[in-house]
Image (cartoon, rainbow, N blue to C red; front, side, top):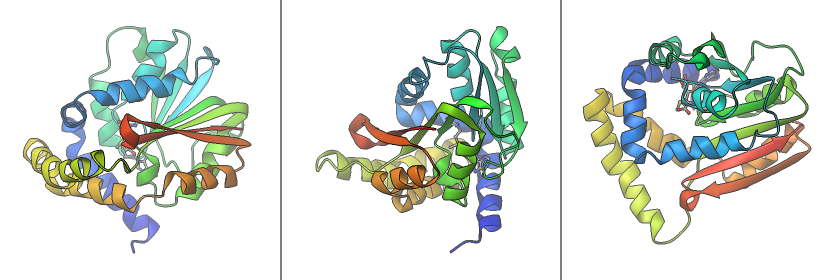
Length: 235
Ligand SMILES: C[S@@+](CC[C@H](N)C(=O)[O-])C[C@H]1O[C@@H](n2cnc3c(N)ncnc32)[C@H](O)[C@@H]1O
């Protein structure tokens, strides 16, 4: 069992090592379905067309981009503790006005660098699984949201459909690390992806933790046969 600081270092180093290939691998390995997942997540915030949204574990900024694409007045604070991931994202930002509405900041999701009651929305795509102290991170997300604000956690889950499950497991454990290893040069990073998905909470456990953080309502929606799940909490 890794200590929190050890896990943080491991995770940060892994993402740093694949940062320049992360977007390519994402599209390749998910057959571009990841775009649909981020679109669907962002749609949940359509009642908040203006004001600031926090994109936590923002990585190379794909969700920050979708958040600013869907609403022309929205501003996004994009926080990640891996500077290389943020830098890769900034390099490929489009030249339109979205680059002026995304504010990348290097910081820890378990100690969010923002005051209480700041944001109407907080999104975390494929980041919660990587936190060292999940509950601490969720507590922080609650703290920085305004009352009435929405938490959206998009995370991998384990499909239960008896036909999809073995196919998905074969792909995740055998095929994906090989392709990803070839493209990124770091097979271990994608073995970590498979093992972290296997070890992660069941949706009902994560929902309980979201409620324990203080969220008054919490629900989840499985997407694409439950390969990923979208969790929605309201403060
Ligand atoms: C799988 S990437 C997801 C990136 C992006 N959200 C996306 O949709 O593709 C996970 C990101 O979480 C970041 N991360 C993990 N633990 C973190 C923490 N404690 N604080 C801030 N960022 C963290 C990693 O550096 C990495 O960039």
